[in-house]
Length: 234
Length: 111
Image (cartoon, rainbow over all chains, first blue to last red):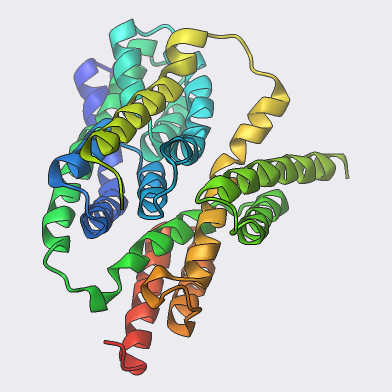
């Protein structure tokens, strides 16, 4: 194999990241549609996709806002969805810890599910790459997805305003959430956590908007961790 | 939605900064220090702990029907769950859900 250069590594990242467009484009388009439907202005919708740039939490914030939840609860729910990225950040340290600060700062901005997972696969296959080269690979993977995310959001927001309410676009948000949950149900512990979350959230529907969800999420995390611990022992 | 524009921008700004700090945390600030295993374990369950609790009330009591349980929407959401889990792929789940939703809405004369 020829020696890896910045260019070759970056280009490989771009190529390896391209298939994720298939996923990112419809997600972002749906976010644009749902956000426009909910009454957000175009600049605000773009703000979400450009600044927050995290699909599940954008949908979470949007749904809480549709329910007119207290601002603090909107933020809590959306940030809770993103807490998993702290794990991504920790897992990247052995690979990218030695890269310059500007690279780490940039990687953090585009550290989402797809870029993280694809990069970890590559890093484990090519441990000989230096930290800065690994960072270039990571940036390559995200280079198509990140701009596509923003552009597709704008397309969705513009198109969404033209679709009449009979088309049940309000239901896009629950469909997107559910679709993100399915692939996460990897073990009994995950199923138990998901089930707990549903049951507690339904039981606490009488509480002010969003409050029940936060309690349900804490219960579900506890149940998931407990079941996993129990399974490790069994 | 009853938020002022300033409130919406506040939400976006706090989410943007908060999400960035979560992503930057270890890579930039905390460094190599290991986290307690229990914290890591709990963190791993956050998405699966939050999202289902959001979906369940929306699926059972959709706003569009005034909170009345509606078979077509319920069937659509179950289709999403089954297919996205079976194919291990969100996109297939979405496609299944959209197909069931529109087929159902047409079949029941709602569309």
